[in-house]
Amino acid sequence: MKVYIKDIRSEGIELHYKIAAESIGLTPDDILQFIKPIDVYAKVERVEKTVLSKTKVSSRYKSFCCRSLVDVERDWSEEFVLDFEIKRDTEYIELDEDIRQEVILSLPIRVLSDEEIKKEAVEHREIIRKFQQSDKKAVRTYQPFADLKDI
Image (cartoon, rainbow, N blue to C red; front, side, top):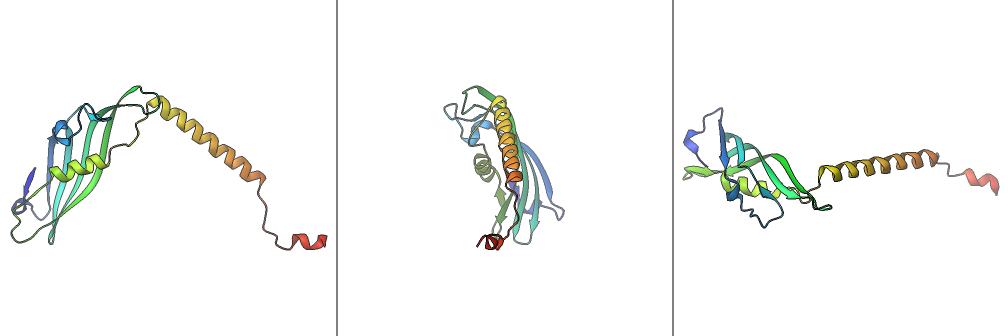
């Protein structure tokens, strides 16, 4: 989406639009694929020679669990700030390509099913519990000269 510099008021402007899921560049052959358009909400402000865009994006994707290969569909959202340096001859800024890159970078590397997430949480709590128990048994104060009386 093009945002003309002259249209940015002192209090900024708010944009709300959608980007087609296909324009992100993920195909059905990829591990993760958007199944809904990307909903973009941006607050665009001009600060001296820079345009800042506080951006929130959300959509829904489908993938498969990397452990159990179960199909997974999940809502997804992310927030980020984009900045564009403007010069005297700059008429507008283009948000879509920078948003596309941020979306790709913020996608999950591994997708887990809800069942696997629960298993992982249980394992994590168990590790913490064991660590806390072993830490209580091993609590000692530092006594550098305690062995001198044995000499």
